[in-house]
Image (cartoon, rainbow, N blue to C red):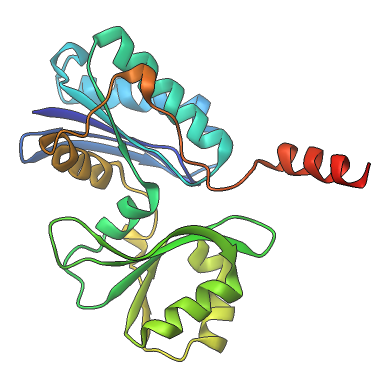
Length: 235
């Protein structure tokens, strides 16, 4: 099974090629360029370097959200376009689960946390000592106070991963009552290799779908939608 993994849900853009049990290549970039500028060229460059044709792909695993609205839409349109052109299925992988998978085998809970702006985070807490991350706290968009409360409620050591770590680290250090740690720099952000690996497991469990049926998971309204809703409520 040859799977292309794509993650453009956050600050980084990442693409990976998984062939059976071998990670053939991964291309991740974290800079000021937009994902619309980088994602397709990254995929093309990676496949060219691997001497691999897109026609050999069996499926595309894509980070389904939550995350950046623009980033998710770029990833979705890229994956859907390729999937429809190649007539291969897409596999939706929750972004936070992909982040937690970066720390598979950790002897602690993992809190995957992304900055959602307005002092909020997209987050979920997982056990990571099994084949798939096991959900302890369901994915949600919540104020950082709620995230800290939920982590403290577990009464267990927790490792934090995701782009929310540098944003909220000071608050976490001040208010956490459990033992805690931080993911290493090399695995802090989204990795398409994790999305591809989870995609393989999901595919084996029959969770692939036609490309046209894929839709991102946003968890909350976009800023434009929130502003429109606020205007309507005032009127």
